[in-house]
Image 1 (cartoon, rainbow, N blue to C red):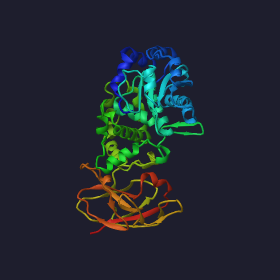
Image 2: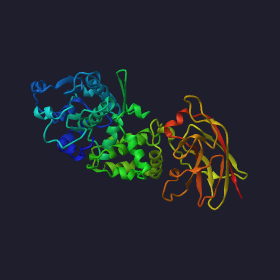
Image 3: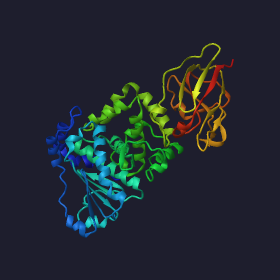
Image 4: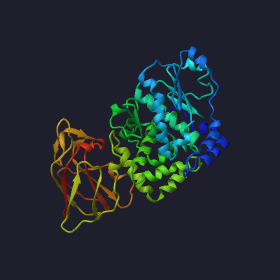
Length: 449
């Protein structure tokens, strides 16, 4: 979390430790226990006095993989934290392609602090750690300040736990954009009836109180400060002293990990976490469709909302074909984001778009019927909810992404494109609210000349 420096973590590992991890944890065969044991020897916890901790009112909670010291009084959301951590371990193994059977003895020591002073006085909080406002990890230890919500406390533990797992089990953790993006991705979770699920896209703000990553992106977009992929890849080890980069790194990781076209390659990047040219390897892996990725990222980030189905809002960039003589009719689904019409419009000509149909734009408290003009009792981004929108994606990039400036079609409009492009449609609704939509509408496209 803010205040962490990636280079500091690398110094803790050391060249010998990194080499041992690289030898022990090849992606094709996991981490054999003896080799992992050699690496973990370099991460043996400091000698501390548990008696001094007890006398300072700090109690010890022990799990299989986490021993947690805290000055918080006994309570369910506190005492269950070692179990939360233990359930995360096999999920980290599954995500990173490691065998959990080889981690039987893997141990992390954590410190959850309501007040800083008792941990300093008893030596549980080393004075050589850099200042950090929320959480920090080093070697096989992690430190957390108490948080105002049970969710965010767990999130912070899982975030720092992901870092510890990366540095003690994997070859490293990659550059800041990947290191923090993955930690945020695998810390965003659901904990229900004693069962943990990692890598969960938040369904609502209420599900993740005090987390705020989506709001970071939404606020920046509203200010006209949408970050490109290159902006995020450029984050250095100082960037995460502020909270904003966590929002962007999570959003990019969630986009790449949830997208059917990019997920497989993104998950392969764990093979390169120990390499200094990690980001160059990333660019090389996505070289063939880099322009698509960069453009679709902007579409995703500009429309980011709770409840978004990342795979469901993927864009089909296939170039359209010329409009048939006499025009054609396109069916647009109300429950999908941008949809490729399959039509190419030519520059310098005029086209008439006419829409009709009746569909549903919400299901609660009862189904909301809608027509292409939208419903004026609720607005989304300054336009009636459910209104038909269009975008004309140029055959050759001309700068700003066309999807960021959609065209209001409603019941009908005339388009006169300056250059050729593929025509896309969607209804005006949040990407997070598409699931309770239903039905289709028809759009007839013809030359207006």
